[in-house]
Image (cartoon, rainbow, N blue to C red):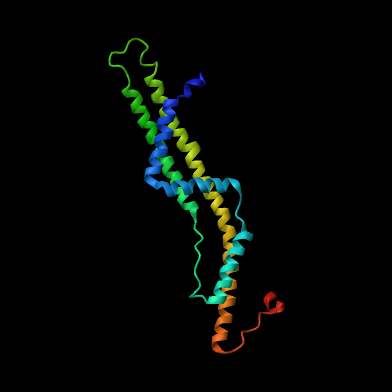
Length: 197
């Protein structure tokens, strides 16, 4: 088998270019950029819990200072869902553009082929386009979507620890605020013996 027959620039341009254009048109610039950013972030580093905790600590201080209802909420977006959806769109579109390339190649067949003309260009390009579409979908875009999902699941476990910490801090702050409004001292924190029991 000659592996050089699997290298075809026209087929790659149809499949990869069409998939990229179709994904961009379906998902838009912002989602496509968010997907690329999420992929780069997933490859670069893991979730920085200490940094996120310091950001949330500022939010807790603002709640303490301004009260729960007057504090300005900060949104910590989850771009991984957008990224996964974008890469799944690309995985869905790649075989479609492989088929489109196949049809384009077959449409280029001569009307009166001579001996061996059919196998010279049109049929190999049709096969390579189909191959590129399947490989791109199942060995590139679908695995990238799963990679981002797994990375997001690890981040979510770290975030849950922060949410638990934040809930404890907010409960402590709202308990102090309620005690101040009632004109009484807040209850003392639980002792170590009570916490251990």
